[in-house]
Length: 450
Image (cartoon, rainbow, N blue to C red; front, side, top):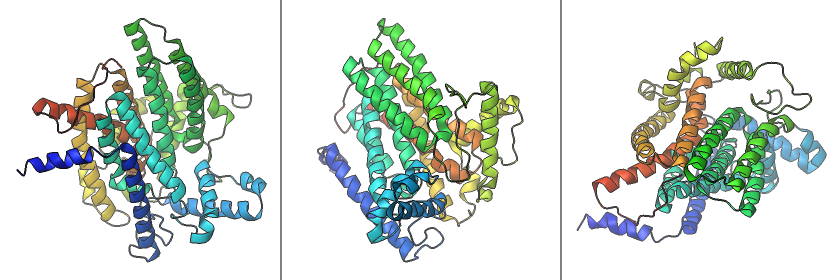
């Protein structure tokens, strides 16, 4: 009899519709954000949250952003749109400033005022993750993946903050969904046109939000192009609407960085793309590889002024040329996939041991999830979309291991790539379960070709 209890619970939960799960997730996030704000407001954990609910131990950028967002809100309220536009600020700060005007004018300039956008980002990420997993595999994988990410503790904490991570994650995943659809579906012209317009908008917003990981976007397009050629060879069809969509996305990725500035705070250098169609004032005589090496070196050096130097990994490593970078790639893969390492789990961080303990639990969870993830890649190796997700996630993790020396910064920058791996891991768990016994829930089938 006890063994029937989990089956009955699963069957009852399986009757809840996705939109109902989304409503539950929205209410949960609202309550969670309110709880974080109250913890900060009443100084219950003063080493971790300030009185505005900003995480000073894990999202310290939010302190600077909150001041900038407040200034933007004041400028828009009292000095007009022109002054508001003249202030140099990242896109996410401009959006948050709108919510600081209302409801911020009533409840204060804090994370509760930002919840309007943060809730959209949080629910949007869950929806896109569900659609991504459903597009590649099936709806049960999508629901399980979305639930896993919705309850991932540190991601949940960061989703309440004033940082740009949630927005950039949403649009990076949206671009991945479009590329997966391009690989899997046989599009009609009307769908191709609308998807192209959406893709251009996603590319523009992502560049404006987080242009410093643009090289991963370029790499994902390279993988998509190669995999699309594999599909054309398999099916022996031209798939012209799909090809047009791919060309539009490639064009947008090459043109946007030289036509639109990626927003930064005042005094910070705007990101650039090493591969782009240059405008009249953006031409460079330097080779692509020379620009890439300079960019990697500069971004790595930028973390030497980061506050929490005790969390640095390989802080003494510098890159003088391409050979140094190539030799460091294996180590970068280890850092990107596995940091923070076990020896760091039991050390006290800048703000105590709480953050390290949470990071240890989540890192151990990812260590465990990597096993079914690799099993999924092997068992579903004929699906081109699986390779796209795996290769993009891997390049993202290795790239971060190459340039980010601070474990705390690496941890939250890595979320979007971990999410790609979690999609594969959940499917891998399902495949392993199907090998050992009958599944608890209904199985949905999808073609394995792409």
